[in-house]
Image 1 (cartoon, helix red, strand yellow):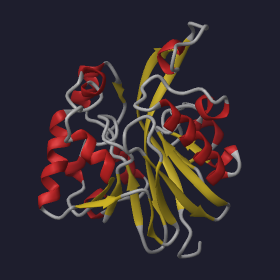
Image 2 (cartoon, rainbow, N blue to C red):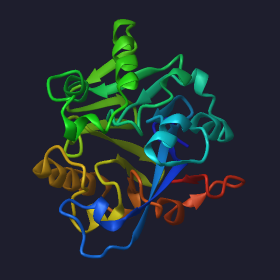
Image 3 (tube, one colour):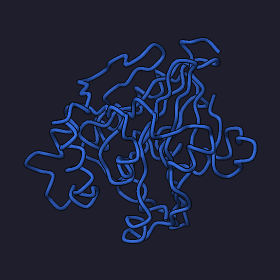
Length: 259
């Protein structure tokens, strides 16, 4: 593995049984079951380990009716990732299922889009359509870290390390960012909630939770352009991730190797 290329892993930590109409903007004519899985991701090179998003806690899962399967930090430890020493955590956005457990990363700098942080500390964050998607204490905790110098702000696209570039796409949230990663088989896009499911991006169907619909369509275009082929796209919540990619030996059903 080159020092400028990464291995990429997805780790499943929770799940939820839902219905198709819940997952598409404007609903869906087929009222069939549709499972949503929850992931964190890790990028590993000889020189750097980067965690992408940090999941949520069992307490949040219980309150929100999700099935919490395992602590993301413990699952990462099974991959040989010691979260207490991870130097960089990319937060794709600040929804509750992406920024829990932050205190388990005491050495990390947290990377966030400036627009995302501004939104969740701004005038509309408390409005009903938005407020339900965050845990207030997680956002407050993160805001406090800014005063300790632990936040790294990005505005738009930025190469954060050789082989890793983030891109603001918006759509699902005001400052949602995706992660472009150089791997041995080309550029992989950790799309997070730019597309919750393959269906969103492959069939051009926006997800139900949206801040800006045109931006969500634009996010699909950016994901497709960066990844070039669908097997290099990693959506944020699709159970098919666990089927389309190779399971990590001994962690079947828990972790897959994307590249």
